[in-house]
Image 1: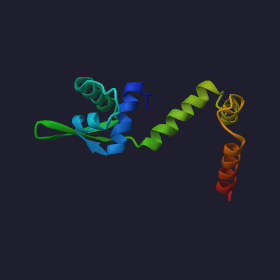
Image 2 (image 1 turned 90 degrees about the horizontal axis):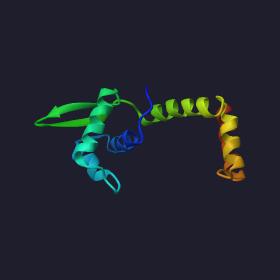
Image 3 (image 1 turned 180 degrees about the horizontal axis):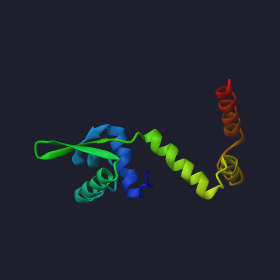
Length: 120
């Protein structure tokens, strides 16, 4: 699974939120500033070519739905991100955010509790 561009990720976020729909549906659901219709249509076609969405012809239009679950994409993306930037160490990742004060001690305690409860 290849990494998506920011534009493709934005489109996938809307597709995941809406489950399925037409380009106009996705465009309506996007925040401002919205891309032009043709840009979004090209982006969705690229996502179809990459195997992220499938299009089903209904009348003269295509209705699109996700082939890849959002959770699966996040897992794959995060694994690559941690591998590329943090020597494949989630400890390095958390340490980075702790040093930069992007994560609080309370949040770290919550993470520890989640890990401990998951082991049981």
